[in-house]
Image (tube, rainbow over all chains, first blue to last red; front, side):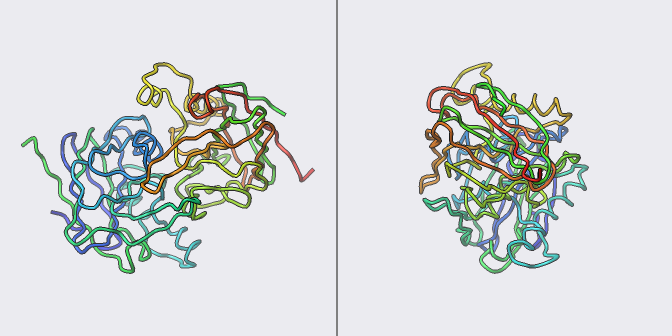
Length: 193
Length: 193
């Protein structure tokens, strides 16, 4: 079990068939996930294709995360929460400046970028699967970022459908995490052992 | 005035301050738009940031299309239709295979890729602003692709907020365009002249 401290991120490799378990140890904490095909940085997670194939903006158990080449990257095989976000990009320093008037705020964007750089990957700052993030769309299209539905100890399990390089954060936005940025935990389960 | 034949695409340069007018000559026809900062292929249109800053999945007059660096790329300065899509990726050969069981179907993905290649740009196949595309989200998150609301002659005007390379299509999906793929027209208006 690895703990990701508040407002930070990590990157690591997953082999096809391994299951990534992401746990919210305290509750109401978001974790942004970004993924690349291991060995081919041009293939990466694509929220738009994932939405199209799911025919939904919400994914839960049985849902598939697709790449920009329409290949399955992950299948959700367990999910205590049932609410995650595909619409929004990771919080960034620019976003805190534009939306909240704050300079130099820690961000998922910076944490993903630095974590992936340690794996030799450059990230362009867009699509992510925002685990436990509770984003709702009103009939007129208005988007609201509400308190996560995750309770202490809740988790989601994602089975890797190809070899992957993954970045994972404990989200840095107070607003997104109901007022306080908390840690995230993860473990890699290898059912082929 | 340039006509984009059905199921095809073009790419061209825009200077900051120029206005791109996209016209639906027959009605009920979608046009996918992709944009890069001219001279820096690492800065490109980002649907997730655009949604976050708009606080809405729908953009119309006054709305701003943002890049992956949170810089304005376009402002919508006129809009006859008021319904365009930020959620879905351009239709691709793989999408027609997966969703419709059809091989070798023409696609926006292929048309964007080829058009941008003629400008020396490589496209990774994800974010687009889907002009006139009528995508709705139900309260349970289900996504529906409905007939475009555009009537013959309707247009949208997008003012370039930086120098850009743009790809624009006449969308290749029969389903998205109420059963028949039709042409799109565009012109570049230079108000600084």
